[in-house]
Length: 304
Image (cartoon, one colour):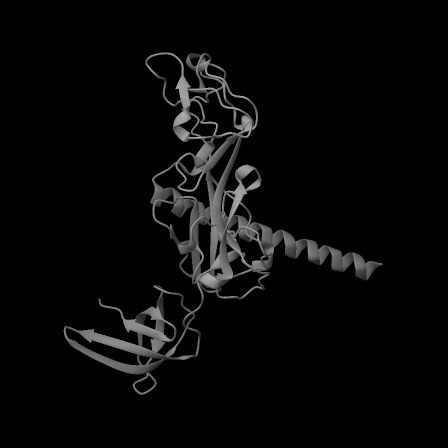
């Protein structure tokens, strides 16, 4: 019994240490997000990192980037020691100095309605939903019943109930769906996603998580970190850029100087994904230098 109690205490201590380390890592990630997005750090929310990824700390330089254009809801987090490259979903709380629609007295008589009668299950356009309220319009407006999907290219909206002009339209009155990439078959971890492994499915946004992949460009060429079921949406946190260069692997180094291009071989000293910097070793001279990954087993000499 004493041995079992001792082991339980040891496991609890290890778990507490890992939790503290991950909390410090998440705080460091938030600091970089706040700086890059120019936003108050208190507004930033990150979910805990998936325990299966075994990521708790970064002993080298922590690199945080927004990998997708015009998208601040996903960050790519990389570290060379220990080596990891993960994607995390980011949520932003409303600033405290902006009154919420429910608390703003000027918005009590403001709401969204429709510009014509809509029957149940009838499809309606985004422009059929209009704002009705006081003039001039308050800022911000009450939340749109379609939420963040109002500008989504493939969005479709159908009425769940009869909608009439002048009556408030709520999110629960609408069935909003979008077309997003899903897996064509069950996928194991470590699978490189190709166009043949991905199809498009139309799903209701009701149960969609905020960190799902919404375009093929965010999935093709990425590698699965976890198992993915056929027909299920792809989560950004379950994907990563594949390691095109691996530690101790012989790589081709390309040197370019104007019209002159030279190629040689070197030994990679660390893993690297597309666009990442990696240190390589010239086996003949014994010198190390920094390169950039441009393909599978191919790097180019970084210009200084």
